Length: 336
Image 1 (cartoon, rainbow, N blue to C red):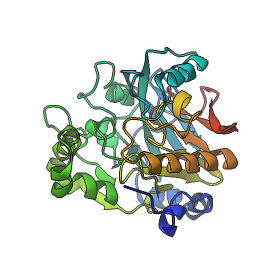
Image 2 (cartoon, rainbow, N blue to C red):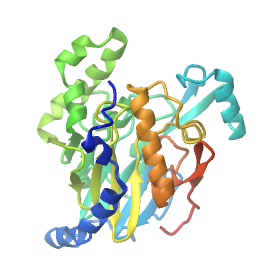
Image 3 (cartoon, one colour):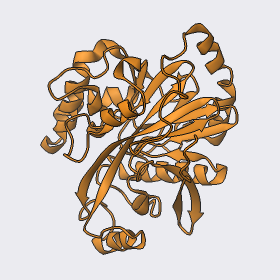
Image 4 (cartoon, rainbow, N blue to C red):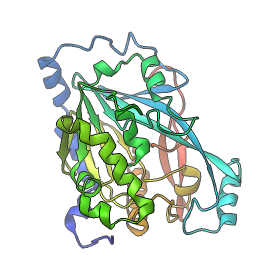
């Protein structure tokens, strides 16, 4: 796949003005929806403030809880497709990290907005590495239960983002929630034609998407990038990592947070070196352009980002640094 740089829809998909406008347009939404729904049974005041596997952030009137799903230990060799191993090891060394393997961390979000509990991605479930799969434990420790979840928004269909929807035995983890997925992502992974054309090594992703979604298809609703998918949550096309990879702006009043999913993997590698391509990027050139556009916006606008693969709690800011960027983690606070 190659990027259509002349396509105005793509150029506008992660536009700064649209992110700011999305917040203004949703100022009244939480109050309007809350008036029509009963209050949550467990309020943020009653919940534990912070914990070792969850971290709360306030975005205006919206509460965002980062929930950790553990990590997978990955070898460095071959992880970056377009950089020599020595350069990758040097980047890890500069970040005071091991130079043979690293912890690829997983963090999904719980967003309390407009009287709803909304998940953004679901983690590995019980199908990942032995050191992953802690999401449900940490989710419950934060004061939530699966029955409280109204909606689940998916950024893309890689297993570490969708496998938390269904346990290994086939049972559904969230029986009452509406599931919102990007239309381009659904159209790609659920296409029999695409699956049949894929190399044998790539067919597992198509088969896993069917395992997860086909039994719960009645719960699934598709959305076009650019749509407001929940009160105060707006979707933005961020293609390249996968054909329908989508990120989400969370806005309330003048406060902003953007969940950037897999725009980058570990910040020590891909924020500092945004032209590097992780092995999982399906269209490396498009992913690189998307990554630079998002990181440039975040640095220019001083927008807080929430990452999926950064060290927990996986949130912070971006500063321009030479030809790349620097990830500046938030200062941990007990009081969100």
